[in-house]
Image (cartoon, rainbow, N blue to C red):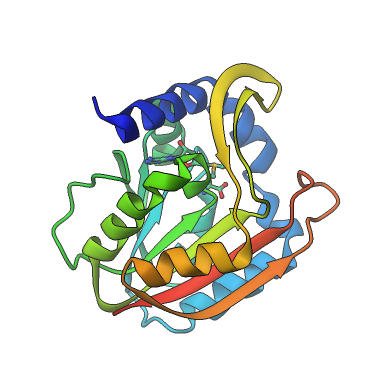
Amino acid sequence: MDHIDLAHSRTRQAYNLTADRYHSLFRDELEAKEYDRMLLDFFSDRLNNGSLICDAGCGPSGHIGRYLANRSMVITGVDISDRCIELASPLNPDMHFVREDMARMSFENDSFNAVVSYYSIIHTPKNLVHIVLREFNRVLKPGGFLLVAVKAGSEESLKTDLLGIETEILLSLYNENEIKEQLTRNGFDVFFSEKREPYKFESNYDRIFVIGEKR
Ligand SMILES: C[S@@+](CC[C@H](N)C(=O)[O-])C[C@H]1O[C@@H](n2cnc3c(N)ncnc32)[C@H](O)[C@@H]1O
């Protein structure tokens, strides 16, 4: 197992343990997040109906993909956690799900019109995040779009608690320039980035959203 596999197997274990709690806390969160709904509208307005979207790190609810599916997109949810996929699949019968590491997906080159990574690269070591971004680039069609959401900060730390459950999970934070540079270095032309403050019911990190187009 190389370094990225080791790091990601920790993520898998952590979300297997916490998926049910995550689902009960966050499945309806978009209802209270007007900013995020507007962002997802802005993103999907650039895509034709029926566009193929990979929701990379879809989580146990698949609710980001669900929002886009309700806007006539065709969604494939990918998650490394068995329990996340087990929960998300029956909830979203019109979406397709696979349990895979997004650092090494089974899709052919040029498979998707867009990839959405909503708080999923935050568990990858920063010095290895290029592997995941290159993989997003590979599965995107030329001219395809990538939306990345991260939490703002500078550190990378190993947490021993996720949603009140004891488990080890890496948390990698980014500043806006850093995440934009990562996309640029890994095959994307960045044309949008924005930072917002956390909603009062969210954890206390600013949120950063970056959109790039595959070069
Ligand atoms: C913070 S949750 C976000 C879930 C969902 N995108 C959302 O916004 O609510 C991170 C999700 O990404 C998944 N994830 C993290 N690293 C992954 C990887 N390397 N491959 C696939 N899924 C991954 C986790 O299992 C988890 O479900």
